[in-house]
Length: 209
Image 1 (cartoon, rainbow, N blue to C red):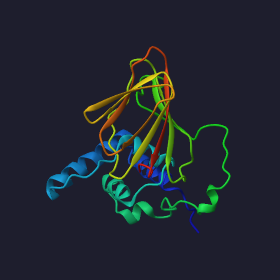
Image 2: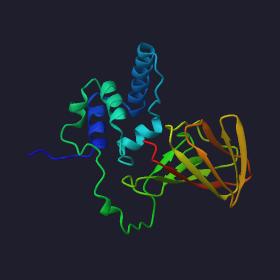
Image 3: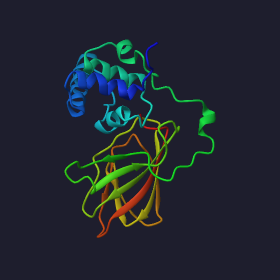
Image 4: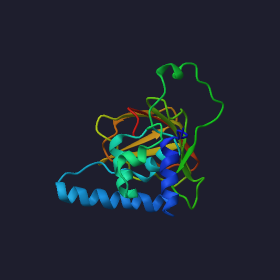
């Protein structure tokens, strides 16, 4: 009987068999998706590098549509990708009860050349039905532009410093204690416009996969 592994482990295993970095895999995903969009005339949401990283690290449950994009980039079928994996299925809802952790569930860095200047820390496990992160930004740093699927809702709570949030063509200046709710499918980014490190809690539902 073969060992059942996490889908993220399977992706990493196949990628490394091809001597491919995760950045190279993401570039192939974008290339294939761009070609598909030209053929079909449709525009679909791209799989971001951040989400690909989270999928491989087991920090999120991937959609089948995203797994298809990954399998195409790896040059295999979806069935081959899912072979001997848990298919990314979340555990029973009863597993969510009474979960306490003195720590964080991982980190996403925006600038790999200065990893401690702008990053997210995950506050809940990947099996949670929503996303909760804490954003850290050094002065004069900002995140990449983000655009989540339609139907996503985001609540931002500024816990320290001053953060400017740009949503489409509007800007909002937040200071400690301020909150902002918006629809996640609009292009948005966060920027520290203060003189000290800024922090914010970001809650998103449903989770951006």
